[in-house]
Amino acid sequence: MVVPRIGKQSLCGIIGFAKSSKASLRCPEILRDGLRRLEYRGYDSAGIAVLSQGLLTIVKDVGSVEKIIESPGFSMLDGGVAIGHTRWATHGKPSKDNAHPHTDCRKRIAVVHNGIIENYMDLKRLLLEEGHVFTSETDTEVIAHLIEHFKSLGEKSFEAFKKAVSMLRGSYALAVIDVDEPDKIFFARNVSPLLIGLGSGVNFVSSDLASFVKYTNRVVVLMDGELGYISASDVHLELGGKPVDISSRIRVVELDAQSIEKGGFHHYMAKEIFEQPYALAQTFSALQTQNLSEVLKILAEARRVYIVGAGTSYHASLLGAIAFKRFLGLEAEALISSEFKVVSRAIKWGDVVIGVSQSGETIDTLLALREAREKGAKTVALVNNPFSTIARESDYVISMRAGPEIAVAATKTFTTQVLTLLYIVARLAEFIGSIDVDYRALIQGLKISHEVAQNILKASVEICKAIATELARKQSAYYLGRVFGVPIAMEGALKLKEIAYIHAEAYPAGESKHGPIALIENGFPVIFIYLGFLDELLESNVEEMKARGAYIITVAQGDTTLSSIARYSNTIIKMPKAPLEARLVTYAIPLQLIAYYTSIMKGLDPDKPRNLAKTVTVI
Ligand code: M6R
Image (tube, rainbow, N blue to C red; front, side):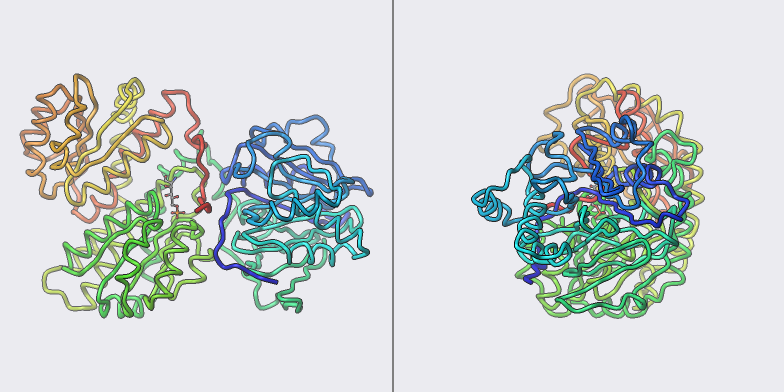
């Protein structure tokens, strides 16, 4: 079988379970919990297939998973084997026909898939010539017909499945059920993540641990090219036609079901914003227990350090690169991971590339790191998910402990990423014996950043709600800062765009007069980030904006003596006194709150912004 290591992916979620008739778990509950947990991965359509007494029942529809869960008869489903899917459309618009599961002509085989089958057009042409009838525009449907094809040639179900998989090019995490093998779910993985969950009297296959962690925390992370099947009592795994023993691969993960509940908040995003003090404290203590000596050594010896990430993780990377340069005077550059090609020719043996990724599955970042390794660089993964592909493929892993982040908008993982990068800078200062940096003070400042976060949350909720009332009426906003304030401004702007659908841009404040200021008119909102670091550089920019009628919001330490803040601000978000490093970690928090409350004021669902998915695995 050809196993391409690089492929396009889509963003769907899949879940499957096989349970014994004695297991007390009920089919509708497992599917309901699983689908709800997966919905953050994609939410334009959903579906399930259940095998019971030789019958295959399929329910699927466009829209949210709740439509499936509330459909007539859902709560009466009674199967020992079932699969489910949440979709984020790539091939074919969101529609009932294009929703998974997809079936063969006789509706005896059902397939759910995350990934993109790159050669599906060729396969479909062959199958159409053979008389197969397709009912969707998806790439996935070919898989069901291919299995049907091999069965019609006399193969047993599992053999037919394996032959079908061997013809696929691209990326896939697959779960397949077949009426002729009513106790099993066949699975295969290439590029798209897939896990096996081992329960008692029940086994799971899923793209996401959160979908079954309520039932078991014993998992096997599948590797590219592996395939097999689960039943209620058995897991069969093979690679390249040879059986694989899973006993040494079983891991017990620390993730309790409660940490993925909303915990009394209306939205995951709110819960995740408010649990930042805890996430920061946890991450700080996890960093202290991780052995960083090898990472510090390669960083100290590096000719150049690149920090790559996408979206929010890129903003944290930018802040990290500024810290490497300003604190340590080291050659460091942050890059958007999908733009890594810009420097790929400049990468030399001994360079270090740090990949920053909450999920550890973002394909752009994964591909950048693969390319870096091919060029001889050492790679370091900075991830929130130590079981992820990026973690597995990197030379070194630094793991944050932000806990699961479900909301599409990253919040607590930004602040914990910044904390982690600054911690590395502090430890590197110690390692290289820097005389310019008081590393002990730096670490102490980071250590208390969870308290600073707590104080910010206490002090800024009401003012951020008031600002949100203003912003909800606006079409656009600027976020301006200087030096470290720029990535924080960028993060604030991304949050407002993502979940409140307000056009927002961030600039280095000094750059605003080179063009962006042309848009300023009466009431145009401009949010200035005063970090207490080179703040005086902002003074003239604030004046320029105010003179043109901007509505000025400032984030600044409450005790600042800068006259521009009091004189020109329409609203000030007063931040508690804190050391610089703690300010760098926490100043995005009021910006997250502003975006969250603006989204609420506009009647939007901040957890499910349109067109987005939590883990972006499409190139
Ligand atoms: O999982 P990652 O950190 O690699 O994800 C990167 C981006 O896709 C992610 O930060 C995205 O920009 C978020 N929606 C931002 O809120």
